[in-house]
Length: 271
Ligand code: HEC
Image (cartoon, rainbow, N blue to C red; front, side):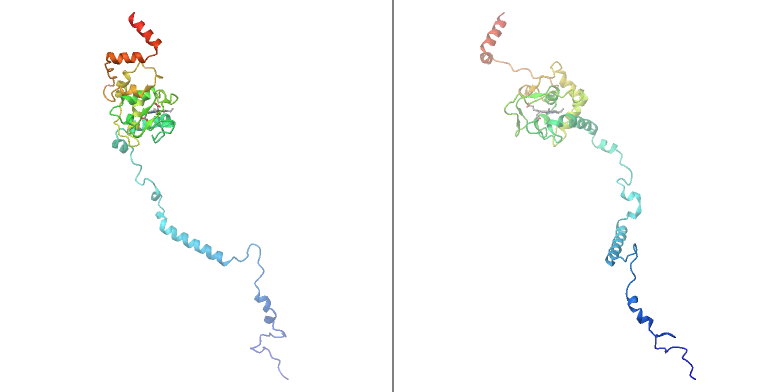
């Protein structure tokens, strides 16, 4: 009587009592991946590689530019703000010019431009103007105090309003800038030191002296270039004495008047 084999042949994958190779039967099942479960689908390897690349780049960036994670590293003033007094000390007129700039930008810039370059058809340039850069402020302060009309030779390259168009005028800006000697001095100091201009500073005292001579002039009596040229640009600011007129000149001037006006004048003088 033979003893039934207790163990299957070692080379066979059949277990005891088995007639079919289970492994072989399930080969197809083993070869397939399990069905994906929603929410746990396998991720594309390129995406994984991309994220890994970004992380690497981020690490490298932080190593380079972290600023050692110190708050001060990115501060504009790591040693505290510089004291404003430094700027004032460098230019004793800084505060005056600032005042002047504020008034200029609020009033004059509308016509003359913030850059002082003037605007075609609106107002002539102040940058490079002979009026602005003159020795003294006597003519300049009159222009702002009472306005200006008529043709104006601004400098050797620019003649404004050559056609003498009466609709082109600058009215008095005195009230607009605040109506004080200090404000006018500040505005004039600002325009004389900006945009390449080289005029000296103007003090409130200079304005007071200059305006004293014209205190009776009405604000809407705009100056003309001819009138202003009679005024010395610098100095105490009194108008120059009228040039003496010869009898011949007087005769010519009388002849130039319309006949009625001349008759009336002669009659008045002979009384
Ligand atoms: C409404 C427009 C207007 C405003 C505001 C104005 N101006 Fe003028 N300005 C003119 C015009 C126009 C002329 C030329 C007038 C003429 O045709 O004679 C002129 C001429 C001048 C001139 C002489 C010409 C030159 O270019 O140098 C000076 C200086 C001047 N202005 C300064 C000022 C200052 C300073 C202010 C402000 C306080 C001011 N103006 C505000 C329109 C303006």
